[in-house]
Image (cartoon, rainbow, N blue to C red):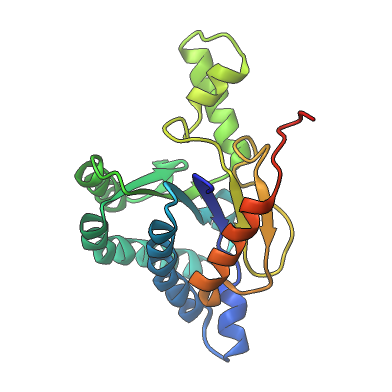
Length: 223
């Protein structure tokens, strides 16, 4: 079993366009699917699920869309707080939260604290996250602590220091690239790409990918 699955949730806008709906509707459907896939991951026995929700590059999108996404994130957290408690889910965030509103940061920290002892699954949202930015911030942290620059010290200085590296990385929506997502942590991840748009990505397809993962031989550079 993969211990840690990371997903690039791509295709919300195209999902909406195919149905002649506003992009915001696609994002809303995508947010609903987060619960579906999180609960499916619990069924499968996955321990860490990281979801790429908002990248450092997404600020370049139209202001109205960015504002909608921030409001959608707050609404999502309000709705899912009970889901976390009911299902024993620990909630975590990676990324630079300095650009977020005080209310959003307080909400994130509150749910983090409330769910800190939950052990069934750790759900991690990557928001205002970019792998290059994360590595730069980690290097600065190492410098401030006078740590020797090596792989171990960099790993413990990253946002993801609290969890294992990625075993299985999935990208929905048809594109076959990593888009600045968990570059360090995915060095030996098994990669899965699907044309299925994120709002349509369901439990059946996830489980099929997990079954394929089990058949792959992971050598980590060895023979």
